[in-house]
Length: 288
Length: 286
Image 1 (cartoon, each protein chain N blue to C red):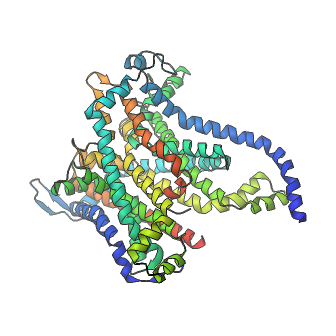
Image 2 (image 1 turned 60 degrees about the vertical axis):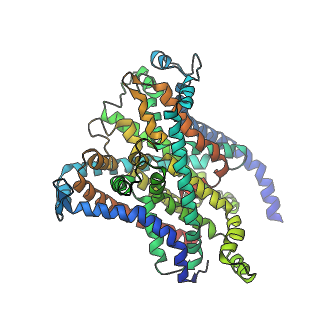
Image 3 (image 1 turned 135 degrees about the vertical axis):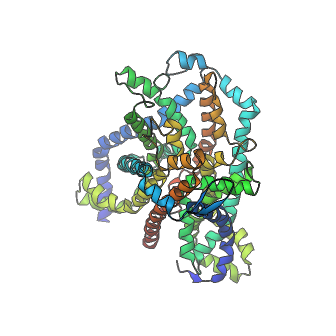
């Protein structure tokens, strides 16, 4: 759409600006403040320069959390994106069933995140959970509170359960925008099912899928509540992801300096991904 | 004409050929929905059992059905006030977010102005910001202005990600409204506020509904900030649920019942936004 230049539009944006500045900029400045200072208590601070950053970058703690985080995000993307596309391709296109399926699929997305954690905590328990009980009676000694591999599996399956529907819904929205004429043309050319997917459906879904990948990457990158409820970051530190580690540092041990430096670096990564996201979005807008 | 008859003739044949594939899709969807519903069913199942039955026997459905767990929650103020607190700050947040986002989204969808792209991007970064980064500074900020443990503190904190979300979603809907409508209204002598409320808002009512729904939802599912910013008076239900862990072990039945009750609000309204849910999650794009 043609937009006109009008600087008075600033007045319309002003409320948002003030509100978000209050809830984003002021806290962020506090973080910056702590990141460069040290204290011996009593609210006396002194300049610490880049000390906290150097200390963090030299320690294993943050790197380990970061690798775990990247592994987690990578695995869930590798499962959720193909599975979501598969589900989207098989969703009923119209009628009552389409509505029923849409509502049922959306349900996990609307459950409070700690309840998602609770559901899987219970579901995986050996004594009272359907999953844990069934696995153990099948002879697989499954116990997510003691075995790191099982804890990982539980957290990943939980995330797949929680968010695959989002990928599927986005892919479904992309599929719906393909005109029937495309399929008819493919039929005339006697294209195989795979070719229809590869040369019609996939290119048409590419934009939406890009959004799905970025959204899932961002949200999994800052996951906190669900794994915290299920495993508490354990056993040991096996499922301590970035956010869990950060909250431990900031609110648990009250190590303000390192936590703030950690936050800033975390935020820079998020900023970078946001920028990619924004570029993809604006390119999509131009095409649409 | 020849084309039309050709496709018409081709349709029944292709349908019969496509039949096995339809069955395959039913199987896939069935398995997927089963995977989605089983954990929820298990929670529901547990909420209808007594604790003795939960820990004592293993059964796929309640042997002696009981609603005692729900009665416990709905009659004890320290339980049901959790829901009330959550609802209060969630509604406050939804109203604030949509109210400030409406004019801003209009500005972004209609005008170029100095720094508009940077501002739009900056809003996005706040939607993407990890709450864990903000937990501690928020705690200090709201304590220093003595808003700690109030509903408005949580509502304002959730604005961090909900205002940007609302702006993006509304902007997506508004760009679909042709600009000629605005111009015609101004020629007809409408002032901007009157035009906005009387003509424009009804046109994007579905967009407002979707934005409100997503603000409601993201405020409702969030726990980290709401737990950090409250202690007693504004404690959300999500934090209250940790109470079930007591000296005598975990009260599984009540925990499950509380969990089921948190799913209800979302489940009630999901039907109305089912066709827009992808658009909402994709921040108004798609």
